[in-house]
Image (cartoon, helix red, strand yellow):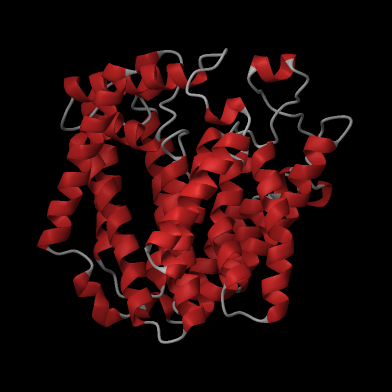
Length: 417
């Protein structure tokens, strides 16, 4: 597990980008080869049974390469884009080899939560700092001008893959499902109370990111947690609905309004409409992975699904959806097979973590390695016997339906907004 911990440390805390002794340390060239060598020599890689999500991931990478070739416009993107996904595939496989039981998942989840609590302290301190500078030397990020005019300050941000307005919030929503489970489930009293104390601070740090997507993802995750924990009853529906209504009533306008002075939401929908147009002109292969901004000349998609749809076409979108659904199904099958409640709670945590990530990706492009890390954690714990049940005819039909509904919904929103 030491390699997984080292990777997570470099992903979340990224000391190689801001702590002097480690700055410019080529962590990828150190961690990946050693980790891969260990997986080979220890036999972990050989014991890993490849299944549906793995094959869909490989097919998706091949389709990305084809989409770039067919577009014929940006051959320079081939080594950049494809090698990025190959790296994520290697990470995905290494995580699968390393986290091969629910006990392993429990350790990794606890380590992620510990790192996120450190970033909770960092985020709150960043927001309240008189200088507005965070630990890595970054200033507060952009916020709606109306908020600034009213005396507000900017939004917290972080470095590495989380160096983006609204992207930092994903750090917190990744950990939130696990924190909710720790705070309310049958873990030790120490674990429960540490997380009950830490949860309000996690909410404060989330609020300071100023992210609409994170706000909605948080509401959804809490509602889903209540539904999973206490079953879907009239009581839980009323409780979840009350929570959502109160949260919307108390939240500032820049988190709840669909129109703002900077036209942030409106611009997103305009870009989604352009994504639909790209798909209409190239429905099979799209405009080529990495070419979205070349066609808009202004901005990225701010929606992972729209970006995949426009750049890789319907087949690329289908493969991407198939990766996600088969990984989630793997976690669901593991959840059903768990005998201990604590194990079921941890597996529920990773399922909700992926769901929260997907919700956030509707408002900002989040096609990063963090996503494939979470998907790998879903698949790693499944037993070999269950792999044949990951993708059958009904899963194929469901993925086709998801693609159809997603494209139709984006088009309708773009037309009506």
